[in-house]
Image 1 (cartoon, rainbow, N blue to C red):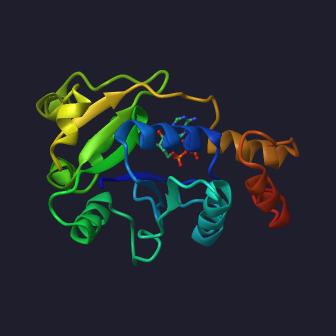
Image 2: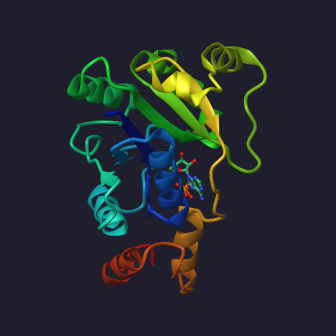
Length: 210
Ligand code: ATP
């Protein structure tokens, strides 16, 4: 069976992430979709709450969902989380033949050329890019060339290969972000229904984002 990874800060996880994750698992027909919280995002300010809290909220948010799995592979590693290292490790776990998908948003693709060894990502996996409102594919430069070279619109063809392609898909984009949830908590506003009830409870119990 194939494996899909969906990385993020998940600070906290919300229904936008979860809806996308479920749709990706269905689209790619994977046994499980691994949601991978990053430890120290190399391109972002360090998250305001600990990795342990973010992982616990993720686990609480996906509890009882049989397709979604929280994978702490990047939290168990020392130092910054480079995706290429995660892909190498997962590829080693699953062997060379099974398709491996790395799922990212179009907003993330825009800065892919700042990632370590970004041009080698497709040596280990396919990239699945979900569109996001207000985000466009790069049109000039090395990243645009790279996208053109690897792009494959036929998902069935891509599923026959284990690595090497990039596929764009339109999934349900809910207008929720972790930033908006953190801001609401800070202002003392309700966050119900923006994230699962178990995550709302966790945030309240641990006084996060206040
Ligand atoms: P923040 O507001 O802190 O920047 P975020 O809500 O964008 O966080 P991340 O954990 O940074 O969440 O995102 C992880 C992945 O989820 C990224 O690939 C991003 O494109 C995608 N994503 C985030 N929010 C949504 C959403 N509402 N719908 C679809 N995809 C989303």
